[in-house]
Each structure stands twice: as structure tokens, then as C-alpha cells.
Length: 186
Image (cartoon, rainbow, N blue to C red; front, side, top):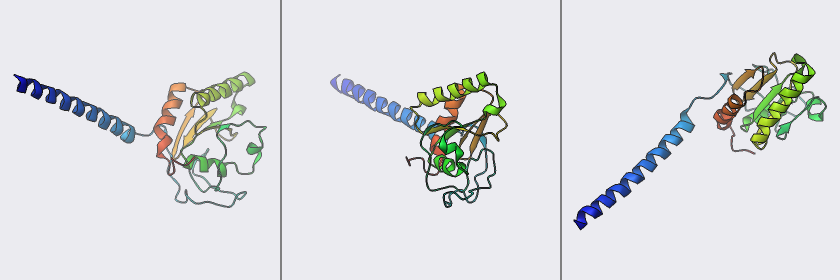
């Protein structure tokens, strides 16, 4: 009878370990192998190349860009408005593509397509998502050439939206963040 109790105890212990191991394997498999979010944009052949700051890093194969030649420096995480000096750079894409290479997500927004109230709401909603993420590897940046009020990009991925859908935005960020060439860079 003692032997049976000990055998039963060992079975429960090893069974519990096996269940925990299976859960860990399934979780890792789910996070590594689940598909990226948004539309795929082909990665440009020269995407890892650095060019001198101030030079034109283009052309790009999408607007806004999701990969391509870029500068060796990136912009700080945060929300940028038209009046910010970084927006006035000749080629801000050169810095922002470097951010994408490091696993950032960029909220490109076009307030020219909205009235003043709509623009304020869009900016507020973008900032809200960014605050939820503690501004970790996210940037909000104006871009008047895009055809939707909002386009989110990560390395090789793009998602256009008319308004901020918080769940969809967080899903895009979480599913694409570690798919960049240098996701562990600051």
C-alpha cells in the first residue's frame, strides 16, 4: 500500500511537470509562429543600408515606408506634431526607418483628411494607445502624403485605418514588434 501511494505521488508529480511543459511549449509556439498582422510589404533589397544623414534615403516601395535605406540614427519614441523640429527635417523617413528596424511601430497620421475635431480625436486616440504601452517603441508622426487618416507601420508591415481601433492597433504592435531585423536594439 505504501508503494502504491508513492507511485501515485510520483505519477502526479511527473504528470504536473508534463502539463506545465506542454503549456510552455504551446505558448512559445503561439508567440513565435503566429502570423504577423497587417498587410505585407516586400522588404527592399537595400533595407539594411545606412546612408549619410541629410541625404535622400529613398525611393521607397510604399507610402509610408516600411523598410529601405536609412540613417544610422533614429528618433526618440513619442508623439510628434507638425510644429516639432523633427517633422521639419528634409527626410524624416531616414530616421524613422531606423526605428522600424529596431522593432518600433509608427502611427503615421494625416490630419489634412479630417476636420479639426476629427484630427484632435485621432491624435488623442493615438496618444492613448502609446500611453498604454508606456511609449515603448512607438512613434506618432504626421504624414500628409498618406491616403488614410492613419497608417500603422512596422518592419515590412502596414495597416491603414480611418480611426484608431485600440484592439486592432495593439494586436498589430504585439504581433509585429519582434519581427524586425534588430528587435532587441533600444
